[in-house]
Length: 511
Image 1 (cartoon, rainbow, N blue to C red):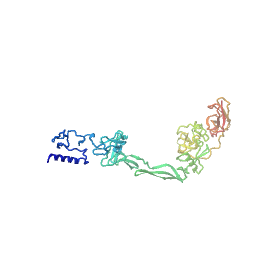
Image 2 (cartoon, rainbow, N blue to C red):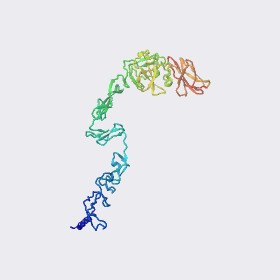
Image 3 (cartoon, helix red, strand yellow):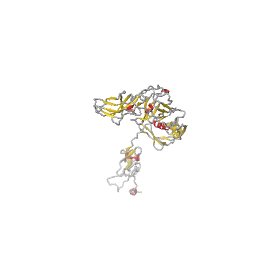
Image 4 (cartoon, rainbow, N blue to C red):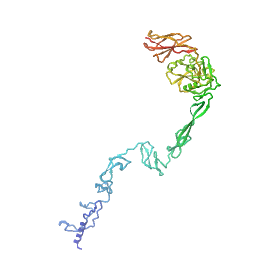
């Protein structure tokens, strides 16, 4: 075949393949070293001679229609020549657009949008908001998914670690197949209390103290029987429990009050001839409050008598022997008619403990056999109404305490001797007649050996003891302020009958 026909066939094949829609862009071109280009007057000008044996070298610069893409991609710049056509084609990661930063890495980013890099090699996360490290206490643990955990170090959570032994994470970062001493893994009853256990099943410290079984609260009466509650403590599986029931203590032949049996008939009452009062003289030793004592005495049937009562402070003072300050009629001002803590107790001195002539050194009559020491009265303090007056007979001291506080009880019956001093009459206080003092006078009382003077800043206020006249029917008072009206009352006294009631008041002043 002639060379002319060969050239014609090659041109025909080129024309057929051109425009066949088969793109070779992005693919290696065939090697052209062995393709001979023949001389063709129809394709070349007369001024250009193309040698039939000319070889096209790879190193020559191709024209615009002969782009070459190398298979070896060595940098982001060469990743893909298709970058920018909005289609993600291998090896592109993206091709334009944005992505939610959380979708890129939800453990690292909390919000923001990432932009596709210009060369389509990945996402530009410069605008993503990173999750700030969570502060924690060193050594703390927490679960990180179902099979991993984290341990706090340096105040931040460390890298996630996988549970060993195919365990799962639970609670505060513990792995199910591992053993953790001092973990408070579980708790249950042991030796009557609830204890913590570690994950190995070894006992740790106590979680809940269930307490101990035993009697609780005060004794009480049901008919003529004494009862007391008994609390039985239990520990059942994982929690404490208890059951309380009343337990029978004893039967009271003479009745029961406030959980205490009344005195038995073999014990006798004692009559005090100096006061005319009869006292319960028994081995009754229970301590109860003033309120309970009043109930006890009013219900007492003792030595064939049933009209017993809780004594007043004046009646209780009538039992004192051998202590001059607190014997009835002594310097102590606390009586049924003077019950103030602030103004009536100032002269109530006690005596040496245990030096009385009574049993166990008590300051009372030797005929009394009661085993108690401090006895409460029914008299309430006028300025502190939740308190009651009482006497400690071991020291003969006037004492006071909450009315609800338990004390010894001794009951009394009868009335103190009808012979008593009458309060003074005709009390008169000078009205601005003297410079710096008020002169008070009154009518003498038969049998009185002394008089006590009291003062107040109002007619119905609290009258405070200010002095005594020593038997004289007059008194000079030097009040703290001039041209101020003061109110005065006076009482009479002797050692047999003690102090009388207070007189009517009279006002006075000085300049």
